[in-house]
Image (cartoon, rainbow, N blue to C red; front, top):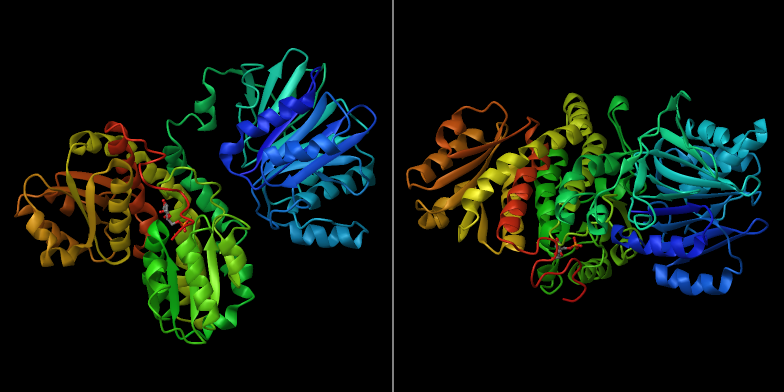
Length: 615
Ligand code: G6P
């Protein structure tokens, strides 16, 4: 996720910005850049790579000193990570400079219009479009920068946190936010701007957090004025006194990155479908799919390859694809696939799923599938990663950096992308009725709110965690769409709390795991109202009659399972196919709390790596 740092005041801006960018490194990024102004000259230095690479490059290029500047770490969304796509971006006149965190969804038509008006673009970014749009507005009406930014932002659809600097007005930086965070540190005759307070905590503990749809002109020797972008009304700045330490700030106030990432799910699922899902128009638009629609429609079979949590997302996708599109799907561990001389036919479509885009086994499986003539489509989170480059086409999940080793938001955003793909294909094939297609679109659109509601199970999950934190074993059961969720729930618990856990299809229990059940065995049963509810109820009865302890994840208002289970966790209702996006939430929270109570290293569990680049 991009990081923003800005400074205007009486100190040298360069060291403040570089140190600030380092503080934001935890957000994950692929390139970095800085702009300084010394009263006469404006200089930009930027590079693909780390902030240390920027330091090295800028020590040669940055021949000026200045007390005003902006810096950026970029997490690529539009355009691969390279020097040109790095921020800051400068407008065509050379006067305006922007750093941007977020996505401008309607950048394509805006860019087209600007090109017609003579603007030239050097990068593939949506941010360069925005700065030239601001310039165009400013020039047309001879406006002050703040006003031009405001008018331009009202033409933009998407999410942003921005800092804009105008060489002709060098005592101010214009900032704005919608959907991406932005904090302003208020010092004595100086202001700091950043994605969170970590870059300025050592200089001031007074911070203003901009709210969505707010903007401010940060001007030297002037009190800060905050306005609503839409209607220009003034907002009283609310200065908070920061009491958090640095580490807490980086984690957004959460104790662990994993918890932060669990809580980010409502917003990142929205980021995943933003600009792609148009429920009101009955449309799904994903460039990677549109460009290769025929390949998908003519596929005799879809093969999904992945590892770990991504493999579980693949299993959920198998159920969804077959139900929605009637295309046969097989899901394979990439590590098995690559070494077992698999049958791959020319017409096969292979989908490779990977959060990091760097998993060695998945990468090797892709290469093998390509060698044998398959069309390979990637579902990755990290833009510009090896897998995203190696695949023929793909769709990013836009979940932002996932830092906790145990994958959470990557899983739900992968399912979101795969569901959208299945819906798009179903529409083209006519394998879903029109009304079902529209219903799924509408349900998917409101899933983030339901995920937010599912997060309210946190206290309940904590309460249950307290009871079972010392359990040596745990069984997770689910059927249909929720069988892979049972696997994922068990994996989460194993990974971070080191409790032995197994996930099973609920009906398969009687072929083995039932022998393990006694009064000491907690069994987590995923039993939402939709789907094979009655069958799951029978499975619960089987456990009950063997004295097993039942923790059930049920749909709000459920009475039948409630009567049988020892503990219930309620989640909102949705259709069966989308239920994994909700049922998985309490399981993530349960594992998290158990691990915390067992004093385990939640974010960096023993023996595990976030990205496994060796086989
Ligand atoms: C590692 C991580 C898991 C992840 C798996 C696959 O084992 O610890 O969280 O699910 O790799 O990673 P990928 O980046 O390919 O999704």
